[in-house]
Amino acid sequence: MKVDNELLINTLKKSIVSLRFVSLNSGREQTIPVTLKPEYLPAHFKIKQSAESDTILMYRIDFKQWEDVRVSSILAWEGQVGTDEGI
Image (cartoon, rainbow, N blue to C red; front, side, top):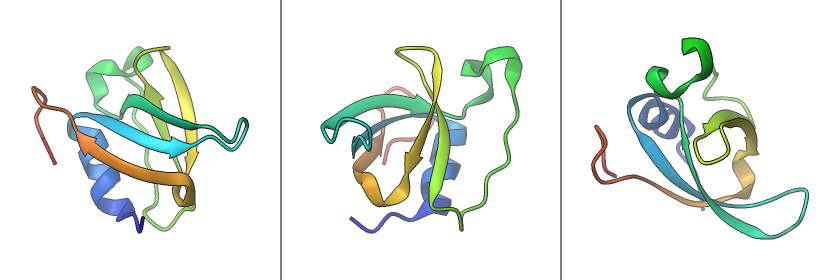
């Protein structure tokens, strides 16, 4: 899948995203809820990311931890229903 990094980052800033990717550690496919929406981030972190990067740092809501995802490993993503943006 060709990922539009800028669109993904902007959607992460506005909503919770369901992200499907292949883990570089385990080689297994995973689907996880992630966001960059300020009210979900610890201590209201603000993070600036480049759409040119080959990785995107995002906050994993289910485990309350940061996840660094390589863009080339992303299989699919969508904004979740009930958040500000559904894609």
